[in-house]
Length: 256
Image (cartoon, rainbow, N blue to C red; front, side, top):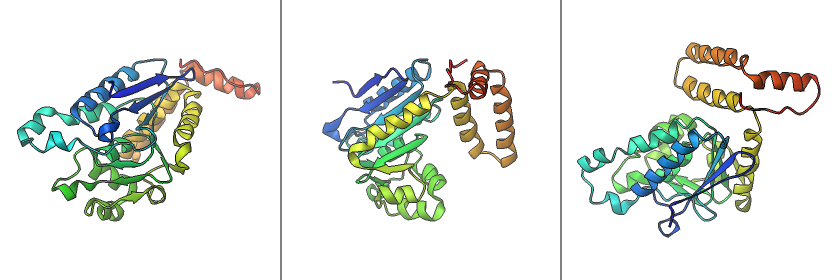
């Protein structure tokens, strides 16, 4: 049985679904390898313009595979190079939307936070519960949560492992939108299709400049933005977009 289900529609939206329901999509090493392979492949696939990552209708991902971890030594963990698998998703150049139903816990929460946009169902729950196992988050949870929610709120949830209901996660700026549970995937696809219809080079530049700039001083971020803007004037899509606007017609972007 495949650990990931993948499809690509005619609009350039790829749907990647975690498919390990018997373990609530726990992130085993095999699952991590499958995710790495999938994101590497999609990064160079011109047919893919935007990606929706889902865990299915009942849960997103329950976290790391505890059965694999419980007998591991520090050397085992080092040799697994799990950070290399996370990095492939973190550096994925195309827009990524997490569609979250049910629980996104530990590594599952960290996986969701690797996305550019998170859409969650009303009953979705998020948490970094590693402290309750005598661990700390290891997939970026301490760093991404504090950047999304601020120090005071992040500390409150990191130090207790408490669950964050979807609406509160949205209010804190951790996720993008809350929709009815049965509308999560549909909402994510609708948004993904809107993004996929836009100029691919501009979309990728926005993602690259935004993520690079948020980790840099303001003047560096502004410099990156200026260079990105200048680059866009060399694209055929800019000419098409401008001419379509002036001619009052829908643009036809080609990704050139």
